[in-house]
Length: 295
Image (cartoon, rainbow, N blue to C red):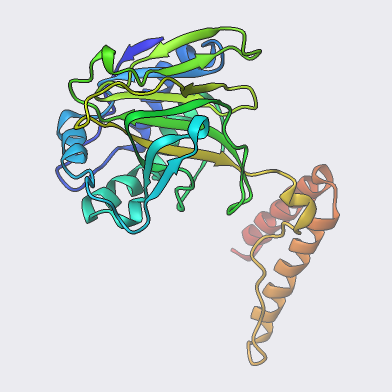
């Protein structure tokens, strides 16, 4: 369940991760993720390079910011502060932008085998999280639909930022079985530990016991959520290709070319895929033969 692996991130010219290397990194860990119980998840220690996570910690906004959301709802979240990336300094904004990048998505897709993941530019529910003494978050399964983007929530990524965290402070993440009959895993929120898991209807988790840390110690994490779109979009929107239009004064050859492209678009919309593919093959072959004759 616990793995030791560091994303191959470089910082010579900003925060950078090669997409191919990110994909391979995820593939190397995918088996452990997909077959984990009680739901697909993984715990990765030493997840970020030391230089990066230490700089994140050094730039964590300790003072309250304008967009902060504070939770004091008892079991649903107590003594918890959510910090929006847009309110943070330039380096932190760059970091959150990086976690929404192509390379990170490649890593997560290869790790989880969930295709076509979409990051959230609004960071709904995400950003930095900070919980103080007495704080807690009850066992729960996360919201399933992002109402802003109208997307299905699929993944949580949590990176803990807590140096010298002691077991006696509490705040351990608990993973429970699907019937809420037993706790399967307890995960300490220690420095540079990343937890990634599916957000299914029965992915029950939380840290429900009040923190017992000193007043000057806070449980901090970086939280990111990823989504997928529904294929029902094809039922709502005609999925034609780019639709070109000729100008009134374009020459006859251009207008003919545009008519052919428009016809091709509508034909693809109205024709069963197998017949459209046959049409394209015949058309392409005809063009190649015509080109040879012209030559």
